[in-house]
Image 1 (cartoon, rainbow, N blue to C red):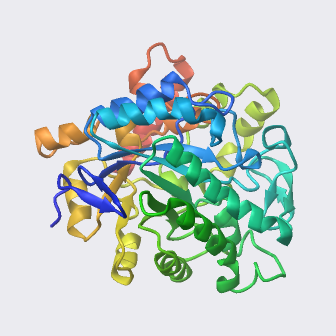
Image 2 (image 1 turned 180 degrees about the vertical axis):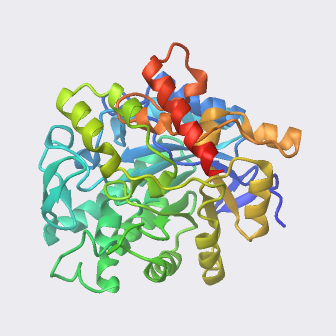
Image 3 (image 1 turned 45 degrees about the horizontal axis):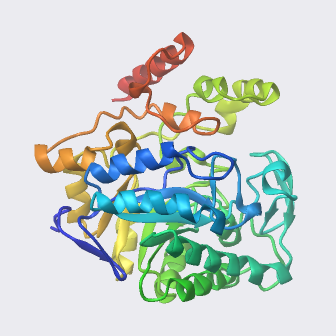
Length: 409
């Protein structure tokens, strides 16, 4: 069994241990710029012992943005990003940034134009009309991925994580659910992978010999008519052939199966409490439970699927999904994975990694009621256990979700 507290390599980059803060969206940007809050959070995780921490999510261009609290990775923010990476490095950790394009999951007011995707249509998640990207636009979009890598290097990042899952733009090309194109970028899986291949060629060229390249990819889309295991393994094999240094094995579609990504129940009242738009607030309260169906949480919920990928691939693989204890982390490593990623555990306990090392079989205090996820669409991600004076209705919703989870156990 590989010990999580031994050094590990992602391409040319060496991490002090096998733990990574996942690219879980923090919601801590302002006007698409980094903030002291974003810096302080990642420094707390670095100080807490993690091998590498990942800033999430950074749009490769204006049309890639869903929220103003996301980062827009451009030269204008290199200096404040450098302050963050320098601070992370001062605590002995490496720094990564997730780069991607949200595709159809945005609005004109944020993206600066009609949202684009693999195909034209209507996205109920936003909700918005979507324009399919023209073939002559795709090379430029791929080059934006390469430009983002170069900007990340200037900002002091050791690695980039390319978002090719969860229904973001590359994933929209890969999935038959969102790719209805009739040209050479649609149809067979080989053709649906063409845009991903072009993006990766630009990324690997820009990364050169000194940056690590990680790709987040789906193991399943999580719903009928989406990608399933067999095609996702083929996508992973192609990413290995394209030279990616490591894969994060995830699953789900934010616009179709969001809780397949995160598991558990979405606290609808908490989610809508912070929404400024009244029409959205009350619309989601009425229909949210139908739009965001729950998916049961259990520790290591992606492990059985991930093991199928481990059998088929020789490259380093990063496990993500329900790592909340040293026992669980050791189990993942025992199955042959090279690294583990954690999100909610490190929001609940930024020093979770140090505590696992010092206390043996430590289990974090996250109770997976997903309040942190519910509020991140309108405010910064925060654990309810760290907040005082929450409204009584939110406290009641949290208690009700805990009770329902307890009844399942």
